[in-house]
Amino acid sequence: MVVEIDSKSGFCFGVQNAVEIAEKALLNGEKVFSLGHIVHNDREVERLATMGLVTINHEEFSGLRDCKVLIRAHGEPPETYHIAEKNNIEIVEATCPIVKKLQSRIKDRWEEVRNEKGQIVIFGKAGHAEVVGLLGQTLNDGILVSGPTDITKVDLSRPVWLFSQTTMGIHDYEEFAGLIRKGMAEKGIADPARDLHVNKTICGQVSNREPHLKTFAGKHDIIIFVSGRESSNGKMLYSVCKSVNSETYFVSSADEIDKSWFKGKKSAGICGATSTPKWLIENIRDIVATL
Image (cartoon, helix red, strand yellow):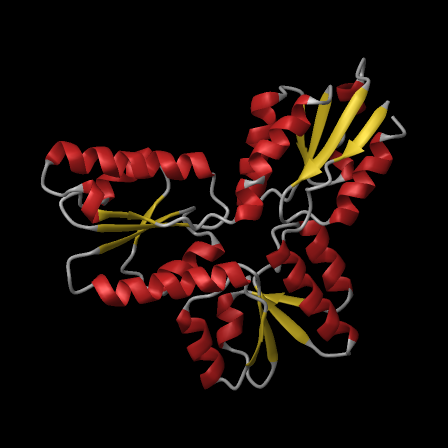
C-alpha cells in the first residue's frame, strides 16, 4: 500500500515557536511551568513533561511565587499578567505573534468604540483558551458567538466590529458575517455598509490548509487524520477531509488504528492539525505502512 504524509500538516508557526521556547528553557536546566497544556495534543504534552515541563491550571498559577511560567501560543487575558507581576512570576512569553497582534487590535478597537454604542463581537469557541484571552482585552465586555443561532446576541441596530478566533473555519465566519449584514439590512436601522466592520483575523496557515486538504483527501482511498481530541483546529480540519473522503478516520495515537479500515485499500494519506507534532504523524505513517 502506498502511504503519503501531507507536507503541510503539523505544527503551525505559533505552536512550533512555543514548543521550541519551552524546550530551550528546559534544556538549560530551568524549571518552567506551563499555564494550561502548551498544545492541544496529549502525546506532545507527555513528551515535554518527560523533559520537565509542569502543566498547571489558573488556580495553581495564582498560588505560585518567584518562578517562571510559560504563556502558551493561545495567549492569556491581561489579568494573568497582573497576577504574575503581583507574585513576582517571570513570564516566558510564547503567545503566537498573530494572536498577540489580534489581542492588541481588539483592545484598541474596544477602547475606541465602547462609549459610542459600538459592539465587539468575537466569533469563536466558548471556553477556548484563545477566546478567553481575546475577550479579556475587552474586560469581557465583548460578545462571543459560535454559530448562526447566536445572532440573537448581537444588537443589529448598533455598529458591530466583528473578529474571529484565529483557528475558526473561514466559511463559517463569512456565513456569520452574512447573517449580521442581512439582519441589519432587513431592520433598516443600521446600514451594513457603514456599521458592520468585518476583520480578517483567521490565520492564513489555517485557512490555506482547507483547500489543500480537500485536494489531498481526494487523492487517497483512506485518510488517517491525527490530532488531539481537544483541538478545535483538529475537529475543523478533520471535517474538511471527511467531506471529501468518507473513509477518513480520526486518531490521536497509533493505538486507535483499526486494521480492518485498510482492507482493499491501495493508498493511504496521513495528515493532521496545526497542533499535531510531525513526529506523531510520522509514527502513524510508519505503522500504517506495515499493514
